[in-house]
Length: 511
Image 1 (spheres, rainbow, N blue to C red):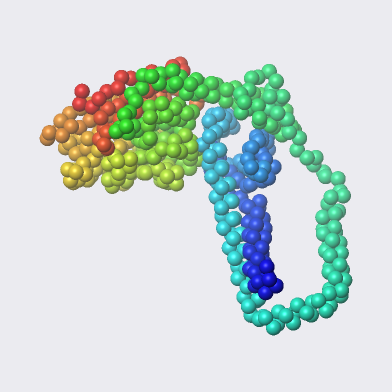
Image 2 (cartoon, rainbow, N blue to C red):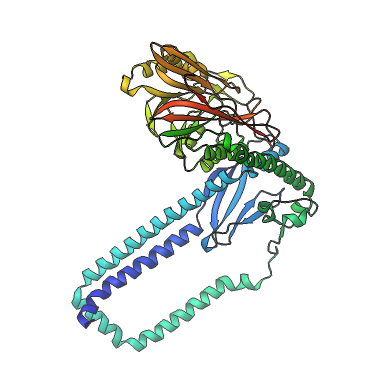
């Protein structure tokens, strides 16, 4: 390369190096000092990234800190400072946390998403800072001009030795300053010794642990040794939960030959409803969907028990277990308040809102339940009554042209599709709410086939709360088969409280 060409390339190489260095330093500094307040499990929590290779949970002064290896590239870890919750007492809180921890995929996915968002945000901020520095440097370089840059270059070389001496003095001064700031602190003995960690299975050697729990470590100290009884109870609750739901998931493989398999012209959707926070059932539901060849999830509502922001873990779990699926959803009366629909939309779900929409070639119409019902509280009216919603949705459905006929209407309460069914303006009408299966019921209205169907409770909920290490009643999911966007049949799969799985017959529509 000629001398002239080298001089022409050098500024660009320098600017590129300046951009990379500034971007990396600013981005990395911002990332390691970043944090975000999110909802994790049943708590508000502050999440911050680390490079210690562990996910560490600080549970406050009463319970010990826990950590588990992350096994991520670069040793990226995370600190989760667990904070306030709306639980009424410690027992309720610990039981709730343990049951959520027994099915942690949704919360792990949420934390990973937060860390990824932090990394992207700080990378963008670093790149922006790098670009700004490059623009300023390039502007100054251009403003000086060739002549002035040449003069400065000769001036520097003429005083080269004097400059070297000055640089040595500056370097020594910097070292003295750094030593004065950080040295005394390093020389003093720390009042609090570093945290000592021990494996959970050594704290409770009499108990059996699965592979996930074997990797959990607890911080030594009074909160650990003084709370052994509490920790033992929590581990036992965890074990019971993973045992039942793991058994149910494994049993799906045994009954898979009984499932109707779609042909190349058919699409299968899995219908769930009334999970009521029971994220334990999600692994079973996802396995049924996989074995049944489903590509779409239809959620008929009541994923939570009270629609509170802390119940985001239920939607997080659904999103994680069905991350490769398109999801069509409505919120139920126990999801009212806006939080659940917001979580659904953030998770990429198609939330029906009284407008026809096509997903996977299927034309949907539906809306969330207008009624609001808290955990253990009476219904309170929303913006409209169920009766008004039923009439309004029927008007929308019946206003569609024949070639845009509604294939599937999804609501939470079957009363919300009553008028549409009576007027024959949708082919299949789906709901939940009753916690028991009703249908499929077939009829012909003005020469058009209409089928109504109510799914039983997927979460096995006897009332409005299903989170637990056992099912209160059978948990039901339904496989619905479509051909060219039209429903042609369905089949139920039911998880029994005993751990057995039963498969209903495949029922073609119109038979």
